[in-house]
Every structure is written in structure tokens, then in C-alpha cells.
Amino acid sequence: MNVGRVVSSNSRLVCRGCSRRLTPAVRRSYSATAAPAQDIYDVVCVGGGPAGLSLLTALRANPVTANLRVALVEAQDLSKVAAFSLPPTQYSNRCSSLTPSSAQFLNEIGAWSHMQRDRIQAFQEMQVWDGVTGARIQFDWQHRGAGAVGDTLAYMTENLNTTSGLLKRLQELGGVTIMDKSRVEGITLGEESEDLDLSGWPVVHLAGGKSLAARLLVGADGANSPVRAFAGIEARGWDYNRHGVVATLELEGEGWGGAHTKTAYQRFLPTGPVAMLPMPGRYATLVWSTTPENAAVLKALPAQDFLALVNAAFRLPPVDVAYMHAQTGGGQQEELAWRTQHTPFDAHAVPQAAVAVQDGSVASFPLKLRHADTYIGERVALVGDAAHTIHPLAGQGLNQGQGDIQSLARTIQYAVEHGQDLGTQMALEPYNSERYAANNVVLGVCDKLHKLYSVESGPLVPLRSLGLRAVNGLSALKGFLMDQASGTGAKVF
Image (cartoon, rainbow, N blue to C red; front, side, top):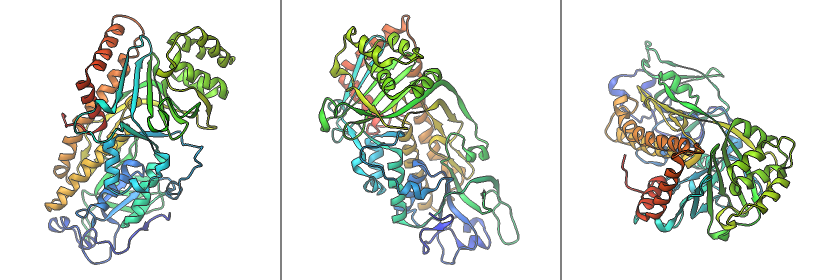
């Protein structure tokens, strides 16, 4: 994919009069006929991950906003992402769960059909339990509210599958200037000249010397967002002193429910939750939140000892798992075999045993919570990880970003329909007010769950188990929680 390539040459975009003289009246015009003489855009998005690609796809797919002049800036080579392809026996270790709401949005903007459907796995049940007390809660489609459609709780897919599908849809739509392999060197405010008034507009300066002026600059550029830094927006939070260990695993079978009833599993250990999430066939993705020391041990172990510790994490008491982590000389496989003979557990209440780990798939990343003070500034909007980063225990990170995109796309549509300048802070306020409170609640809930289940002893342990069992026994409450997590329930925030 060539740097600076315009996917479509006949797009009716930013006012070409803007190339000569920007006046308040002209600024609210979103189409013209003359060829562009300057790199001036209605929307410039920095970041070509799922959030940034979803936004541009949504804008191009909507007839109301399809004539906006839009550009994407991304440091990676997106041609490699678009050409994503792996054998059916291999999966990327960076996977995400998509709620039915997120999947429906991807379908509405035309990206779902471009994803490799044989690499997407729906699951219908989820088992969550306390590693200390054994208290358990089961989520399945039968407990969902009346508005839920189908029996799917969520879909597991590789992040590369999502971004590849979005890129293919963008190429199909056309009309987007894609500048990949382009590093942002700086962002400044534009200036007024004799022929052009860009004062107050963000100007993105790229490493190759190119500059892009934006009516609206969107930061979809991750937790260390240069766009957020340019806007002077603080992101507050803390590090968890935990790492997320990921890996692609092969199980001994397709799951206890077979190919058509898949189950996700998550166990809360004192060091952090460990989750086994189903992928197609006999494959699964592991997400294990643990201490940096334990993460280092896991990454250094031979395959068979690594698998032994993974299987132990779902079957043995936390003290036994901790002991196996402390075995610096190996031998975890033999230790697991001995301890499982003396530890009663229901084999069908835990995932099937992992029998192989994909070469090169074991990796880790630090976990942190961050929340920007606001998602908007004058001619700036933040989405996805640039606005918030969350603990992965609920699988809500990508879905929060997709929720941001849906809201921001609606906000931009409203501004265009009503002749507003879509980059002003006033025009962007509906997006901020809708998403900030909702995301803040989810961030807070996940943070409190992490802290609640990090406690190994004391009165809090029986109390949390009592609460978990109570929720499991209240079908209506459990259904409400499931609908909120899946994005299909009534909005309460």
C-alpha cells in the first residue's frame, strides 16, 4: 500500500475553496468540485487499528458522511495487515472477544463479510469461578433478556482478522487517503497566511515532510497517544504490577459441548484471573494475568512444563499453582501428574486439557488502567486506547473502542446533517457526554473486580463468594448483567 495513495480520485470532499481562503461560512461546506491543492481534510485519523479503521469505514459507508475528505495515518505497513493469512492450524496470539453489539456494527458498515469467518468462533456459555473458594457463576444464552437475539454470548477472533476485514472494506468503499508506513513527527496548530487561514486547525507533520491539516483530528493511536499529548489532555490511572500472558493452545478435544456449543472459562486466582477462550476446532487462546515474576517463569518454560502450569491453573488450589511457579529447575509436568491424583475436581467444570502450545505464541504485556480527563478538545477527539485502557479480565477493551466509534460516527453525522462545523468542541460534546460516563463505569467495575479477587484470606473472601453464588441464583439479575456486557441491554449510563 503506497504512502499517500488516494483510494478514490473522484470524491467530493472538503471545500476546495478552503485551498484558497477559509472563511467561517466556507468552513461548514463539506463538498466542492475543484481538485484539492492542499492536504486539507475534514477528518484525519492517526492510528490504523480496529478503532481508527472502524471510524473511517463507518464514515465512508454512511451516505450522509461519505463525501467528507478523510485520511488515515499509520506507522505500520497496512498491505501486510490486509493480506493477513494463516493456515487453519495456526492463530495469532492477540485475540479479542466481540460482543453481539460490536459484531452487528461491523456487519452494518460492511466489514463483517470481509473477515475470515472460519477464523471466528462464537461461544454460548461462560464459566467463572473463585479460585480460593470454588464459588461459581455460569453465563449462558438462556439467561439473557427478552431483547437478545440468538444464543451467542460473544465471538472470539484475532485482532488481525478484524483489521484485515476493515481494510478490505475500506478499499472497496474508496475515497480514503491512506498514509501507512508514515511516522508522526509532530502536531502543531495551523497558521493564517495571505491565501489560507488554518489558525486553530491541527496540522499533522509526517516523517517524510508531508503535512495534513484537519478540521477534526482523531486520536486512535494507542495508550501513548501523540494526539492526546498535542491536545494537552491528561490520562490518569495506575499500573497493576501485573502482566497479561497470552498464548495459542491446542486442546485434547473441541470442548465438552463439541463444535456447536463452545464455552469460555475464567478462574480468579490471587495473582490474577486466568482465562481460556475458545477458537475454532480444538484451539483456544490463553489470557493469564499474573505477576511479572510469574510471567517471566511462564515464558521461559519448555512447552510441556508451560502446558502443565496452564492446566494446573484451572484444576489445582492456588497454593499448588504457586508452588509450581517456584520450581525453577523444571519438572512441572511430573508435579501436575502427581498433584492431580490427590486433588478432586470435576473434569467437565474446567476446560479440556491443553496438549500443545503454538511455537512463538507465548508473550506478555504489562497491564494498566488509564482514563483521559476528556475525550474531546477543539478539533480533537480520542477513541479506543487513546481515551482509555482497561484490565482484560472482562474482555471489554476492543468493545469499548467500538462503542466509541459508533457514538463518534453518529456525532459527526449529526453535525454534517445540521450544517455544523464538525471539529468544534461544541459539536463533539454529544460524543464525550455519551461515552465518558459509560466507559468510566466499566473501567471502575473491572478495576474493583481485580482488587476484590486479589485477596487471599479474611472476611472479604466468604463475602465475595456469597455474592457470586447469589448472582448465579438470580436469573433476572444475571441476564441483566449479561445484556449490559454484550451491549444489547437498555442503556443505564
